[in-house]
Length: 160
Image (cartoon, rainbow, N blue to C red; front, side, top):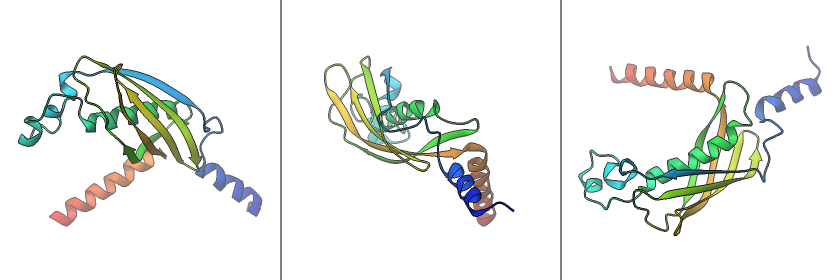
């Protein structure tokens, strides 16, 4: 049986991410908006969205910002690990039409166990389109997928 100090170190390692992941790390990516990322194509089942202007949809913007943060994290994960968004708090300040390229910059602002915080900003070459905070949780995908499969199975059984 391991001594209490050894058990504590093993638990700390299981709840922590790599030491290379720390506040101050940054990542930049660019993305050119196409018609597919505009509001009318966001939930095409919605007549309300289909009637709106063809500008970069907020939902796609959130996904783009998450993508940038996930790319930063990926360089600091062990095999089998990934990350999932757990909180978003973004403004959407300016409309971006298709054809414009958005530059997204993210900075790691905090690491608390397996929760990682970011400040994210997007610019379309003319305007600051958005900025705000994002949090992601580092997870073991195999374990996470198993829990989701159990939930889906339980939901199917409850509906039957």
